[in-house]
Length: 375
Image 1 (tube, rainbow, N blue to C red):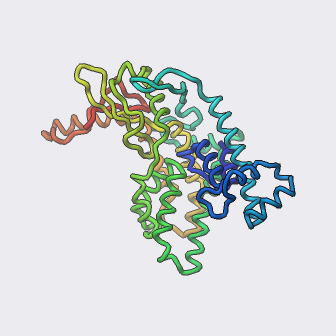
Image 2: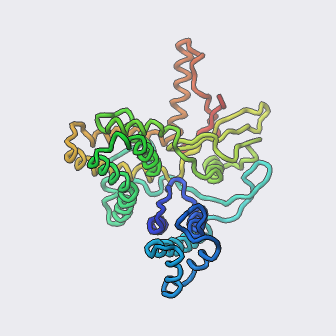
Image 3: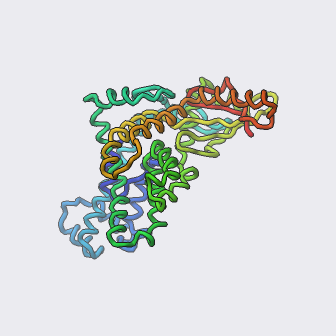
């Protein structure tokens, strides 16, 4: 994935990690090279043909520069093409190595890959067991330092544009006129950075003591700004986690999620029982524990430096630990099922039966899949 990120950056398009689509990226670059929707591009197939020529062919490069009217633009578009080709090959290779053909995902017909997901296979602790000291030991080991530095470099690359623009706004006294645009950019940036930062962003949207109010406003939309992960992958997780075949258990199950959030997404289904029970099936994002654990570790490590540089009175390390406990607890759907059941029982005992949580379908729930009756 680091190779993909480097290529995307070279091509001038750091695509969202949460919505990565190599084929779409390849098509996008080709479209730009061909001149579609870009006034600086070379129109038609001739432009694309030129881009496919050897970059060392000086005569063809000079001809292309003349047509584009900008030598730097010509070089940039040549690099775009080369990055595009490398990206496409890398995505195809990755697709071949991680998937095989299997039977249907739809209850009626279609085909899918057989996908094996191992949750928490490279994390310092389990779901609902946040342990910052275990994370310190885990990520400080020589074998994992490189991965931590790579993630940090990725985050700095993603955020550098926003930070630079915010500094320029301050220097040029244009903060008020740019506030709406910057708020939207911050919303998109946090969404791109992954589930941990989405959760932190949601918390910061009400913490104007830690984040300027003009930027906190933009984070209020995070609840509805989380893209879903691949629907086919989610359905494969349901089968793997529950040890079932979808068509054996569900009369219907939506091909794509009906809702998504930073940790999981929800499918609507109808059980293959006598009552045709409608259910909501929540599926946790694959590898989310790995990502959350690493990002919390980096936040906690950088918190003292941020506190000193910004002269903040808040105990930022303690705040990160409080966030971490809450975030990691949310990753255990078995615990959520237990609390959901206990809440409904408590309301019933108090004579408040009209106040209840959705009924859990226990035999179709696990640590990473939670099925409840549809409300």
